[in-house]
Amino acid sequence: LRNTAKKPSVKNSLVRKYIEINSPSAFRYTIVDYSGSTVSKGSLVQGMNIVNTASLVNGMYIVQFTNGQQQYAEKLMKQ
Image (cartoon, rainbow, N blue to C red; front, side, top):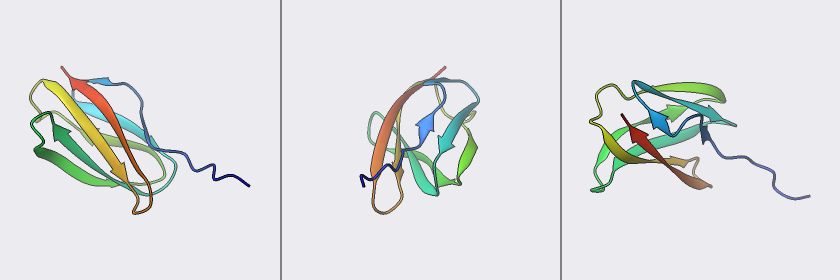
């Protein structure tokens, strides 16, 4: 059997006040700006999660996900 574990997915990569993230299980997330500074971090539960981005300045970010065994990243743009 192959490992069919799925990664968390950002519903829309263009965000304003919040990010909707669908997570297959418990993951930790870190939002990093393009200079490499961590601007937000927290935990995700299985299912749909809402992460507030109202305090972020407009621009490009990378959302990193990890559960201790797997790591993923997605780009997003805050407007």
